[in-house]
Image 1 (cartoon, rainbow, N blue to C red):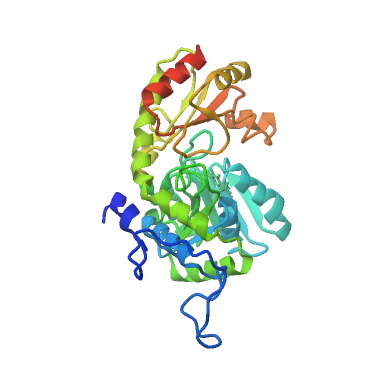
Image 2: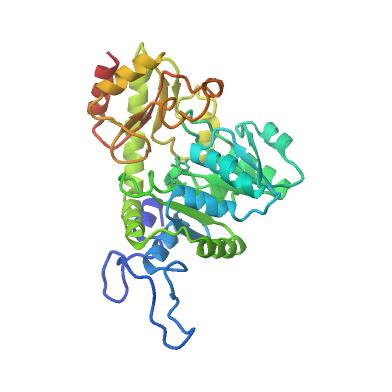
Length: 377
Ligand SMILES: *Cc1c(COP(=O)(O)O)cnc(C)c1O
């Protein structure tokens, strides 16, 4: 089965008993048992729910993994994956990971004695140099937010295998439609399904896919023990989103290429960050390990004032955090998603006051270009 077909027919679809072509929403917490301890496979919905199970099956299929797990948010998914570690372990993380992952590691997991080092994972020599005797995992995000930095997943997989580390990849920005980290040697893929997988700005959720029965068993134990599961309604919404994921990603990719071309031709736009541009530092690796470059662009307009002007004048771009939905979104990382990072550190990373981040949607590209042209004028 090819990818778009898998999005419609992969995993569990429909309902065998009634012929319903959409998986029913099993809004239920408990299940009748035939005799004490003798049940139909479901006993309590934290442990397992048929709607959530159908979603978990589809995402495992799309990522070419052994098992999938659905959580109440991307952060709940990442936290549960981190629970595979023990106190005293050390993890290496991409230095510009999602802010929530940064906060979880530095303000919560540190209290349980899980040690961490942030490293520029786009440079594999730096990764190798940062490995300690107690390092247990590599946590990679690629592309990153908001500068779209790219990490070579095959190289990370080689390093992980040579040092007996678990390779965890946050695949939120690329989606399984463009990038399948398990095929490149990752052990675990995590998603904020709030973004492209849901795709309609209407559900907060997280997904995990693993590549071994052993990790699957451990993670199911954690999912059931910690309990940050996704409810049946939201599971259903994600399955509905997944059916059009391929179509949306294709449309977004096309729009994004055209919008980048427009920005490149605009005199007030200096640096543009987009892995699809040949001069982007990670372009060659991105091209090798992913089939698309995605729908995120950041660009510099020189000053906070100019950035404010653009944000106040756009009509079709919604000023909001988050990304990956059908509607185009615009934000200023320095004032929004990355405001909690000290300015000095932001500038070191390249997150200037005039940096604007776009999440491109599926609107007509002529409208999006005209909107930005007017806002920049
Ligand atoms: C949004 C996001 C998360 C967190 O997901 P939530 O669903 O908001 O909890 C994690 N990683 C990346 C890359 C994200 O963009």
